[in-house]
Image (cartoon, rainbow, N blue to C red):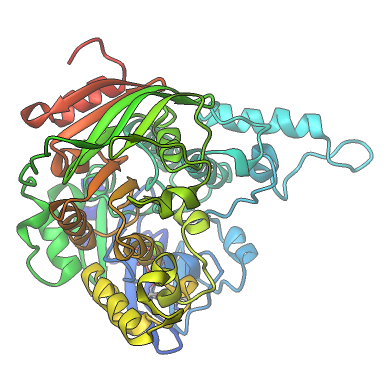
Length: 518
Ligand SMILES: Nc1ncnc2c1ncn2[C@@H]1O[C@H](COP(=O)(O)OP(=O)(O)OP(=O)(O)O)[C@@H](O)[C@H]1O
Ligand SMILES: [Mg+2]
């Protein structure tokens, strides 16, 4: 199918027009050029990858195609016909549906209400029938093999991964001719990624065209027919996905050779004698049964587990953001009991958390980059209660540089940054505040490969200066790459610990799915 498509596209003068074509599209936001004459085309039944560094313009392109942002120039064609998309409604009429990077769900509505928003079944009196809504929504979930989603739960109570799954089903449900997926898998583990691929494949069988935005190059190569690379708002190349290597794609993304940093495994940082954090039999809530682990000085300990196996609760409990029912936490040899995150942050040792849902838990979107970054560390930059602006500013600029975020954005509101750059700001703010224990929950989610290497570098630097890090990632490769010790969680408990040479993708995976031995 793949070869035929490409063959057809190359040999014929366009006998069948592309399902979607974007030609010379530009968009500016004030002084920022988000897109500059970007073009690409997607065929019927094709999955077309769209990759690029944070801020390259991917989401802006998706929003233009979804009718949410108006392009300054350029044309959009669907099935060979030029379309003008002034609103989300226009996009819907043109057969386009989108799963957004920043999720479009209404938090206080249920799964069913979100799923059928605007298409609620009405009863005889013209009122929405709650019962029929549930039945219909359940049918939709079953059809897309997503029956694990609790149809009657409020979205605000769902985990980020469940919200992401719902966002995907909500778009699939429309069986659109063109499906746009903006980093749909950023919070999903390997099983859910397989699930999504399967559903999307079903859709392409009906002739739909799919645009898939992701930073996970492995997924892109495995899933897409072709991939287009954006750099600084321009398309700089389209490759056949199964023939392109990560290096090739990265070179196009960055416009230069990629540093070897990301590819070489981190030298194991030897942990010292005394553990800084000791957790024993920790349990709380429904998810966390019994977690036992230690983190030494200068150590990066990895945590692996399929979604919903207690790792999230573990991080929240360690940070004082969730209740502890059982077990003990010792920090620096002393038992601690944080009733609130403030106590964790302010404790002598300083514990910080990069949370799962950074947009809601980690940032004040309307405040500037600088204020967000320096908030937790104000005391360090104040003198007699006055913040010395110069020292604060230069500290922030230093971190921005390390994170590869444009320093000119220092006074812009965080909401105007690209999704990935927002995430980097959250990590930056904790790197600035000098805490000794860092809890990193999927810190590179949505971050581009180049910046990922830089974030890894920062985490390693933090550890080499004596910091202790606990690192969960939904991407197993990252655990293998960064950690010399990985603890695996299964059904709410730590079930296995892998050391040194034992740390491999296969060993982690088999322990994650509860295999007897690995
Ligand atoms: N509403 C806005 N106001 C001002 N600038 C914006 C706005 N939306 C996007 N930008 C800017 O446009 C550029 C492209 O952003 P976009 O969100 O499209 O990037 P992206 O490729 O999706 O990145 P990421 O991988 O981080 O999600 C960035 O410099 C961003 O700061
Ligand atoms: Mg984006």
